[in-house]
Length: 328
Image (tube, rainbow, N blue to C red; front, side, top):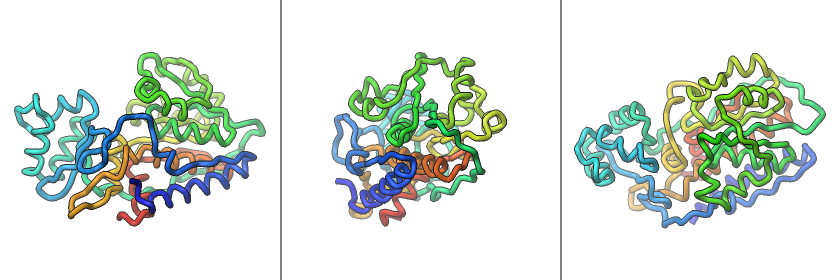
């Protein structure tokens, strides 16, 4: 059951979004409980996340969240822990992490590109530095290059607010939600226009020329290969709002870190305590909370006629909601 104070914090952001959308001539209504749902078989939260891909484990000097959702992560356990138990990765994690220091484990996981975090490590979210902008009289256009949950949810809420949102699907890297969670996918992307486009093609630049808001969920080095760097984008599109959603931040030392909804929720301290041990509160909570926060920040930038890069990290968004829910 979701913590009541967390639902209160979500409802508070929902009211802010409703007020901003009314200023734009629409009314966006958000059900806090529904915001956190997706059509997937789940187990009760505890040391294991409800989807059973992430586990809270105790290291020598603290608790960590280890997320082995991808085959690459399972295959990296032996190198991460310098062991031979490649055939039983979870046994190795549970048995060996307790002998190691969190700092060493975190450093090695980052080098290997694994979604691992220390519980409560994430700083609170910082305000983005935006500059004044001029908005066109027409309906604003959004280019949604994101995937999975947080970015598409941001786009869905912007569509509810009356923006024209185009969801880009790269045929080489399709968004897995359409197959894995079709009802959830429809809720996130059903109100958007859809185009199939290779992200490495010049068509992305042409599409960007026609949009007012850009949503991404890739790390900066991947976007840089597409020519999407802050300098290049804002030199050409100074009036653009770029919502950059990442695990631990688009700028700075953590920009290369990998993370998903459960491990970044733990990084933000969005967990409960049961007999002194941490416990997950829900399913990949950092994802919907980040999507909500990103939409709020984007709508506020539109209403206030501001532009620039809105850096929205899953971990720091979780930390912000954890603070507001009295969990840190």
